[in-house]
Amino acid sequence: MSDVYMERELVPVKVRRYRWPELLLAVLLLILFMCGAIVLGSFAYFTAIQRRLFIMVPWYYYFLLAISTLTILLVFSVVALYYVHLLLPIIVMISSFIMFVLWLTGLIKASIELWGPLGSINDNCVRYVYNDQFWGGRNLDTLARIQQEGVCNLWKTTFALEMISTFVFLWLILMSWQVISRARRGY
Figure: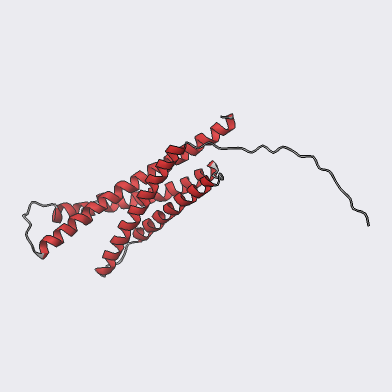
């Protein structure tokens, strides 16, 4: 039995490197993490209130809980891929587009509930919570009124954070496209 040895030529492989704007990517991911965490906590709180009151929990509460959890997972996966130098712009672009559509859907539904017609959350807050009646003192009514104001303000906060998340994902789509175009030009 004879051994056969083959020589192979080494073919140089061109590895494409993508240059991400590090500071901008870090700031955008931090904003997304904070928005996702706050919306997750807020809607978990709203869900607990609804269950405590024995009221049916609307579907969009769970929807916003799911997309805020997905946002947090996406941030961690982008950071991990960036750390091991495997962050591809097309992955960020596609996942950002999917998350943009999901956040936009949640934003539209939350805006309808918050700013909608008569009986919306803002309408009820203005009518029952932000009215000009005097309140104060050390009693249960004052504590309930403070709680009501907190819930009304938390709704407005989550609406603003949903809007910020939607625009940040749009910005990530554009930034990924710029990273791809710079890599094709050889910068």
